[in-house]
Amino acid sequence: MIKDYTNFSMEAPGCHPGTSVFRAHFKLDTDVSSLFPYINAVAEKAKYYKSPHYIQFLLKGIDCALYADEVIARVFENREQALVFFDHIKGFINDIESNKESITPNYKKQEYIPVLEILKCLPKSNCKECGFPTCMAFADAVSKGDAAYERCPKYERKE
Image (cartoon, rainbow, N blue to C red; front, top):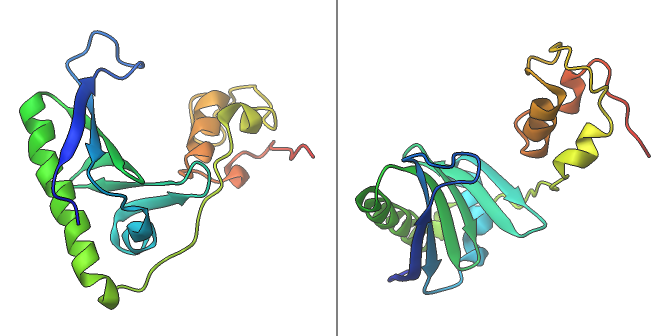
């Protein structure tokens, strides 16, 4: 399925300017979106999103976001680490393609809700009762699917 990549780039994430931690971007030579439900079924911490259409997961401890024909992964200290990781993700995806008849696909998708929309429903008191240091941090975790609204005792759904 995947043979190679083009347009490889690396950049420091905006939240870590001046750091030696990098995010890598690979443009794939084929569309892999048909495999998202299979990846969702087997990948560690997989989150399959409806809009935009992509899947996020961990592979060998690396955060990956896989779109139809591109991969964004982090964190790397250098180019060599990122290129070695490409071989891992390529093998992972090609193995899923080869074995998909033995994998029960998981079509369940998460709806992405912008952080600021979630924040509107929170008290903005930074009370820490949810276990997060700020309401913004909690809203970010909810948006990513890492926390449930119910952890905030003061959450109010705005219609």
